[in-house]
Amino acid sequence: MLYFVVQLRRLDQIIRCRETIIAFAFIVSLGVFEHNILNIGFIRYITDLSFSGLPIWARVIMLTGYFVLAYLYVWVSCLSSWGVRYVSFTIFTIAVFIEYGYAMAYGRFIEIADIKIAMGATLENYHDAILSYFNWLSLISVAAYALLLLTTSNAKRVGFRSFSIVVSVILVVIMVGLRHSLVDPPALSITSFFRAAIIFPSTIDWPWILKFAAHRDTLSFRASVPPRNNILLIIDESYRSDHLSINGYQRDTTPFLAELVSKGDIYNWGTASAAGTYSDVSNPILLTGVSDLPDTTYRTRLNPSIFQYAKAMGYTTFYYSGQTSKMPYEFSNDDMAYIDNFITTQDMALNFEIDFEIAMRVRQLLNSAVGQFIVIQKRGIHFDYDRQYPSKADRWQPVLKSGRVDPAHRTELVNSYDNALHYNCETFFRMLLDQRDFLDTTTIVYTSDHGETLADSGENYFHGGRSKSEASVPLFIITRKKLPVNTNYRASHFNVFPTLLDLMNFPISERKYKYDQSLLGTTAAEAERQRYCFSGALHGSTFGTYSEWGKAAVFPFDQ
Image (cartoon, rainbow, N blue to C red):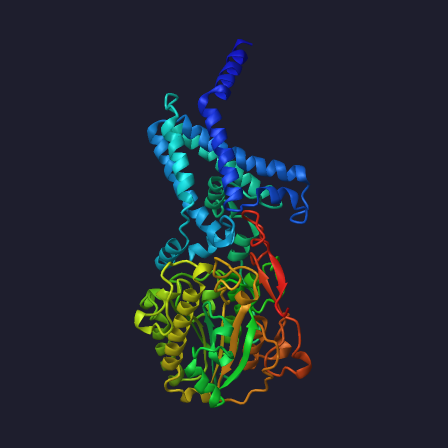
């Protein structure tokens, strides 16, 4: 009995101690700051009944749990030695800088899709992201936390062992919550960071990881006659269709493509709708033809890829990446077995000239033989736009100097974008098609992964949302062959995969999966169909903080 009395007195002393009250006040202030200034939707998560169907009491419990974990971290740091305080301050600073950067870019903290994208990013991507989205508001929270650690007593001297135990408890609780909650609530920056830090080890047996490790369905058909043509699929980066002069843009951004149009070498569908407004949605759709979104059954991981169809028809396959040195996110674990030649940034110079090196290499291939199926994932003109071309290529000025998508400097933003598009597009296609006799035996299908906002409606991010600008991509075919097409048809990314199958002459009777309409043979009656685009995590995940941007949803394009 005496033992319990002693423990209760200790608990009472802890509750009444100055550090406990200060830590509580800090967490409350941090929550108010991140809710009101960063617009992290703590209150909206509780009040918006349409979000997940959870009762209000369950939302309150989940949200409170994340606040308690953040409080536990801050409270223990206030009771710790100076060495532990330094470590806790370093973790907090890194968390706030990263999370506030995402809040500035997307109006939310980090989500699982962001982690997957970051895993495939280059050092240059990280450099550009830091320059573009360092949020000065993070200094306020970091300074407040530093003041808290400097002004609280370290007499309790909690050591590294106790601090490590507390952090481990936080991670375990978050892990359990992730595995057993229907939807993940918004969290303070520090707990959101912890949640992101454990997402990969905590999801080894989650469906996405299982599907990533699973094998794609196989194709039994094998062509008896080798192919007599070449097919080239070009997936560009961040090209917005209405900024190409061949689509009516007032600036002469694509003069070389205009020459091809005048010679009848281009079938142009103008503005097509992207499958998604960022690469992790669009690229898997382009390479698998899946059209039901969100892909909750993971068919983009399981259906045969375009490389499997190409190998079944006897093509030699190539994949060129101007963006990554690793296996891209959209590839399944066994896709490499169907790619004969895998060429990435590791094999080429990693700068804005890499697309031109790819163009020269592919031109040599197309001039040398038939029977080749090639996919190019270009570097393109991803933001920061003024880093995608040399300063001597500034045709339109003034150009962007801030390194941010700033609506207040939209003129400079658009000028930099148009300069980048003109330089990249003009140089790439001139190098690829300088000697284009191979167009008699080659068909080039071209599109982009997504468009860009260009701050049209005051956005401070470049893509990933739900505007038509972000979903507007070019789509055209370059060839000297006569194709049965109707360019008035409202095209989309979903048409690309079946079009490639037709260009391969893959038998319709052997197509066992549901695909959209091919661009070859569309009729006038089909031209006015309604298109749609998808925003959010490809597989419908709701991981991450609560925001309108982060919801997985299909939105209409033709409105």
